[in-house]
Length: 254
Image 1 (tube, rainbow, N blue to C red):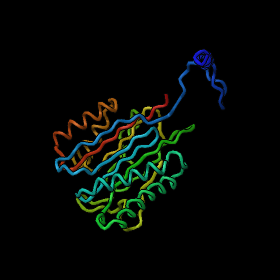
Image 2: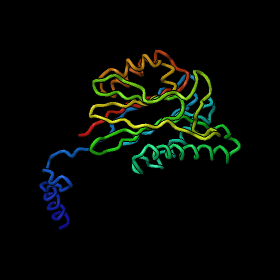
Image 3: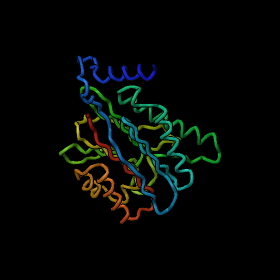
Image 4: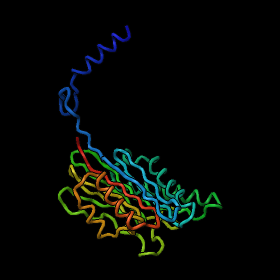
């Protein structure tokens, strides 16, 4: 009897239409779902001291690099990303200031952990994150702290960095998640079109490839997977000492 009822329900679902704000949606038609389709990875540096971490969700992508060159570096990055995921910025507001507050949450999490544990006084991390806001005009909100980078690659256009590094060459971070000073993250918004691409890289990738070569490689219209493979091939030739993380995401609507 249960099987019979389930069969009838499935039959009804297969022919029903979906009613929404724009009227009936024909059965069998794909539903538009703006999202970020991403691929990423961390190339392990020759120093063998993990420092990078990243997270990919449907409308949230973030990467962090713990600084200091110690075993605590990866802990700092993980704490920053954990706070971002817990804050759920893709569901809690659409203003630049909302993303600023998300970064402040991560800042407090890392700083508080450092103050509570005498063994971890130097927990500091970079942080780069993007959030896709759906709507009539989909857009990308971004926040940046440290010496990583966020790139926007418009379909058919020239890749351009959305952020500036918060450090001088090999010098210490001028802004960092967990530093004692007040944090002023770089935040912004960019309108997206289907086929646009966004890329997040940590400092290890920037150092290994250089900004000029990075731009050349991101100009390739290959799939995210093929683009990441090529970037990995070039990093293998460069043999970076530090971890190098790259996340490539295409904006799709179907």
